[in-house]
Length: 251
Image (tube, rainbow, N blue to C red; front, side, top):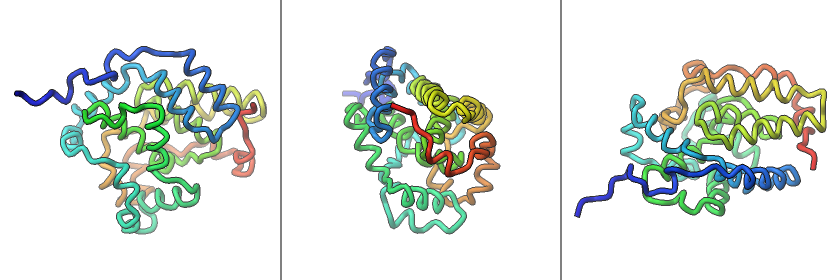
């Protein structure tokens, strides 16, 4: 019997319908409790559409992308390996990621556990699910590469950047929705300009899903940003850290 085609319709990833009402309900719950990040996965599940098949095919056409798909490295396993993370010298992407996760008291496995609560099929043994796990696991790496923090505006910006990279409408929905909420609560903050700038940065940057992150982690952060065409977030950075920390979506 022939082995199943890893690009066949295993999935739920093909022809997935958009569910805007489900996304809206999840966003309202997220506004009520910013730390309930399970709602982020609800939104992403509702609005993923055909972005996963699109991204996987783009990966397979990208230089080195087919090799990454053949290896199917599970980034979650790497990112949860303290000994592996400890090897990266100060100033590298890996060291910056390590410091970011420690300072925010985060773990890659924590994010993965939340995703499994909403999307059981994300652990399926096919290339679609593997690519979905890859996008999930690089989220915090993109925080480091882009310079956006975990405050509500920083999250809105990094997901707007992510929409430009992945075409997943869930990212755009969260980014614009959060910007509107921030503007409603604190009208003096240029939240919309910040997320639009982030989206444009994502459009101009190299296509990050095709990066070999095991290699990238050893690269100096500054040179990695320059090589990948990731610009300094001017609008976001102009807002003081104390002000950003105090921003809220309301409730």
